[in-house]
Amino acid sequence: MRVAVAGCCHGELDKIYETLALAEQRGPGPVDLLLCCGDFQAVRNEADLRCMAVPPKYRHMQTFYRYYSGEKKAPVLTIFIGGNHEASNHLQELPYGGWVAPNIYYLGLAGVVKYRGIRIGGISGIFKSHDYRKGHFERPPYDSSTIRSIYHVRNIEVYKLKQATDKEQAGKATKFLALDKCLPHRDFLQVLEVEHDPSAPEYLEYDVEWLTVLRATDDLINVTRNLWNMPENNGLHTRWDYSATEEAMKEVMEKLNHDPKVPCNFSMTAACYDPSKPQTQVQLVHRINPQTTEFCAQLGITDINVILQKVKDKRYLFGEYEEQGDLGTDDSEEDRSEYNTDTSAMSSINPDEIMLDDEEEEVVSACSDMNTPSVEPSSDQASDLSTSFSDVRNLPSSMFVSSDDPSHSPTGREGKPGETVQSGDEKDLTEFPLKRLSNEHEPEQRKKIKRRNQAIYAAADDDDNDEDRDLS
Image (cartoon, rainbow, N blue to C red):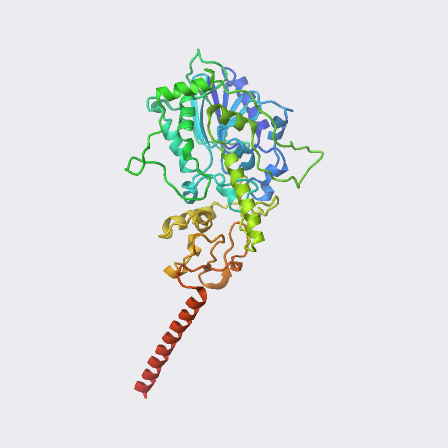
């Protein structure tokens, strides 16, 4: 079986398929499968462009939308994983994988499928240590922080893949070169000859072992910003082995009606780009994809996006209650359909490459690793504090913010007194007062602090007077 492997696609599907056609003319036969290794950019419309973490000058529609609308069809089965330059709102609709267009399949956050007896697995995104242990809490519309964290790999996806690793097949893995972008005179495509099972069907199939692992780990789903670890055999967890058993795989096959074929159930969930009618103000919506709904219902697992919407609804109701109580809410900015994701100020070292200011993210990662506070932040505070621990001062024990405080704690930057740090929702944090963990009432606490400070100043004055007297 001839398998083509492409590097970063960047939405250049027309050029890639044209190159495949040329390779077929020069090679021994047609290509049976195309694997794309990230930065696929399944952009359907202008709203999707705004969900790519790239400077505006690099937001180009390219050609995927023609395959999404049905104007064109992929000439070869195409399977891809996500990278760090994606229409994240589109891919988020398919956390367990699915069709983004006819004959073009996304593996999901992590996934394993089979084609002609060949097992194909992959994981989407890039690694950043400060987000690795968090849950999948992001949802559109994204803010300036979540538009990046959405594509950061999480430990639960790595954990799932480890449970589904076939040790007997590990030594038979296909290897290929690191490939370049789809540009002239660049090595962006490689064609390999891969042994396959001649008796296997010529259509995409689910991997039963992988589906069994998904069912087993369904209770581990986390949609919060909390940092957490996967179960280990360390005496702290009642279960740590979620690998598939023969009995569990039989149950999965029964749920599939003994037919592991991936259904061709693609459906459009968003309006497609129309060059004659550009719509720059298309509203960003958090969608539930019918493919994911069908998949989760068949296996009896949880749709992450359904949980995220329920959390959003609860926060909205809670926000209304707070507003009535004149307490404010920290979620209003995140729920806006329009937000500032303009990163035009970022510089690009290579003019031919779509770049993020990854140095900024590396700094964040280093700070979170070296300066993590001894008291682990809880709930939503975790992600806000993790954005830059270098900006957080170690406060006395009496100054820690209470865990029931709905606001974010303001922190001053060293060397810049009076400057405030803004969270992802860009609110001025000085409007929220600090709470003190004390059994005393605040007025009494203030009086005691005032008296204690006066005593210190008085003692200092006495010491200065004594020194003056000695010098005289």
